[in-house]
Image (cartoon, rainbow, N blue to C red; front, side, top):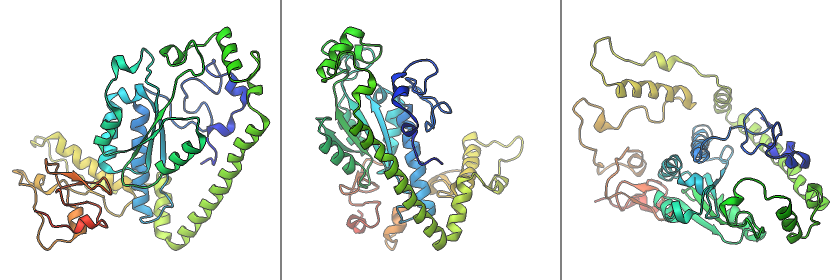
Length: 373
């Protein structure tokens, strides 16, 4: 795995060739084309859904192999625009992220009120912040993206673990400071033209005919390239921590290496019972059996995380949802697969959905010891 992302393998000349055939900087990045790009651009909303999947995978990996440690607990960052958040797939994935409390996920929303066709007032007038709060997300705001100190402080705040994913609403003006195209859908794609481009350069304090290299000072270039050295230093420190963990937990480290290397045993698939020809078994049940076997196979754990369906679905006739035994512990109750109900609520501290109004599924929370009616 490379220590450096796509940006460290690109030059100013590559940027100057953006959106041209054969360049390393196409308008829509493709995997296996530019070093460091690990996923091709797809339809709107796919990036948000993919980021949720990445955050889920990271959280699962950390919980299975290094519980209680930050060794594998990294943050997944995703950039999205208004068009991305219009799509149903992004909403469904974001809802799931809120339910799971994926606080290792930060979605930075370029809130410029513009889509490729028009302003959002014509097609997308909903309150996105309220929607994400309803999903169980934390919402942060940046109204002045040119305030770099405030931007850095808010990004650091967004990466904090709060038991909720974070939506960072970043107010911007598309196409600024162009007087002709700024704040319009025309700035979304296509060139500004030589005349308007010259005016924009002049507004920014550059010569109207200044090439790209003149736009980036040597001091700026040196400062940004320090990120490469800093990244190498941080990665070296992480590798040392990884080696120390392998020494302390050799069995877990061996399983993790096998998991990362795709070395899995297919024995779990041999235990799947799909019935005999002619048996009347719903495909959802046979599919469920196969998926649970795959969960065992791919989880990297000694046992599947959820080896069986909820108890009220485990019999042919079904049975009502369980009630909490008076003697059960908080941890036992927190692991019970409660169904959704109108009485479910969220702990204000952790944002975790609770099966009862006075309960929090985070067992270390004081609310977890509250009485349940």
